[in-house]
Image (tube, rainbow, N blue to C red; front, top):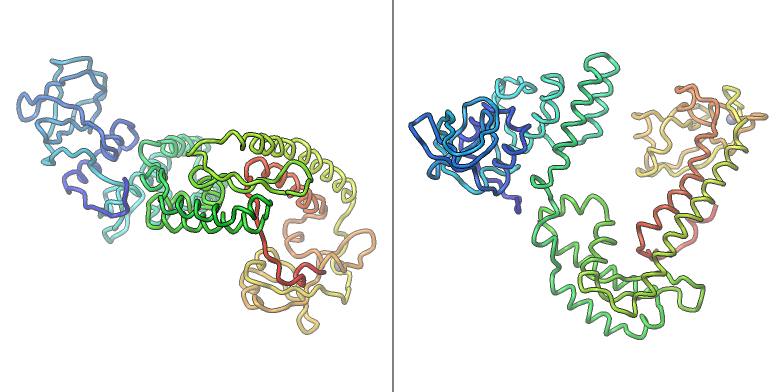
Length: 456
Ligand SMILES: [Zn+2]
């Protein structure tokens, strides 16, 4: 599965798969179909009987290689111990190939082919989607959850499942069945390892050549600990690496977040890069100039050890700090409640409702021409891009608490009067940052051209 080009699958093979969907739950069968594997060899006795050449597990739908042609076993399941055991077979009319199908082979399904598709039109889909639908949706739920013929967003599917569970349309046992199947398929690394490609496992030599050139050119600045230059070198090389992987199937994995490039690939393939020094001396950053792939130099060992200690320190010490802040905030806010409808304050917070911020202000109240408007899902769209006057707890004039109008309608709709858990979000962020510093070691450089954004 090393490229994104789709090939067509032999129609007889597709008929075989659809006629034996239960085989998609058998590891041996899935490996025979989707991976480059030697198919079990056998000898034909007569057109419908074959002699097994080696011990193997037999099930209805198992593929055999008989003189370079694929045969399907029609016997019941069981282990066959050796030669001279006869099984019943039927010829598929398909020649043996090292890999029979790929997950992106286009196929067309009819309404009778799989339980969760009953449409009147033929369905254009792929072998990979057929596998996912059968194993994850049809085997546990039958026809209940419709065929998913787009990119799988498991969060949305599970939301739907929770809804079905609460409305009694499926049982807890079915959810457990689903969970077992999804974990079986999800850990099937022989089947899908998108990052296991030649380009993913190597680095373009041009990037290493450019690295060496940059290191030579900026020797003095690096030795002086110039963080801006170090960061520029890293950014340029990481951008080159990202560009060099474009179009490779591994990007399906890497493009989920920038950490794969900024941290993992950078350290493994290009260079260790900037490391914050352990002491508060003149030189704040050291620079590891080679990659893990090339091996560690003796002179970098102290830097790496310091980095490991720094990460562990942050995890242990600063997590404690975050926890303490949480306790403190809980004490401060534990008796703080929303106690009235509207305090009637005329003060508002002026908020520039940008697209990326809009989600955070859902169900808050704004004042337009002395009228109160709640920013519901549809309403908020109209105000995106505008500066609005927002009612805010910052200006709430309720004595000994807050009002619903200033806090927003979300609190009213979920009937939440206590606001402690919202306040704790702040200290939880400190804890998370401390934990993260153990895992992400890249130092980031941000250029600030104006301080206006940061001044309240
Ligand atoms: Zn208020």
